Amino acid sequence: VNHNNYYTWSNVFDDWKTAKIVYGTKRQIEANHTLALRFSTALADRFTEDLIPVIKDSELGEERLRNNDLVVLGNVEDNSIMKLLCDQLSIEVRKNFFEWNDKIYSRSDEGLFLALPNPYNNEKIIYLFITNSALELHQMTKVVNRIPQWAIFRGDKIIEQGYYDSEIIAELKK
Image: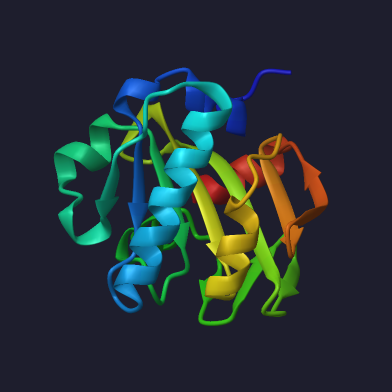
């Protein structure tokens, strides 16, 4: 099947040297920073000894946004880059809920993972860990899971997962 988006979570290891983990600074800055550092360490422990650099959303300029694979953590209330990307990709995310596949997820223990081409450079990838709470972000990132192109989490368990079909890709590009 010919798709513009064939990326999955495992592609994070393809361009490890240019990847960045982006955490939110709108609120709970230290908690978000600690979680991002822990996730970087978990990734390094599982696959390589190199840590993915952790940067603040407020320090991600246009050049880094365009020239790096980005692992973006949090929700639109915490992370300005998450808000920018979700708005650009027309992914419905607000405080305490997100919508995926025409279904609204509003439980505090629910989260969404997406692997997508970076809208600023299609040769780079964005990995979005969208959550309804800080605790859910911790649950989603405490273990390095095998994830296809998208996944719905409830706590630390993946309850739905899959690959994009052409209609979803077309919707995200609008």
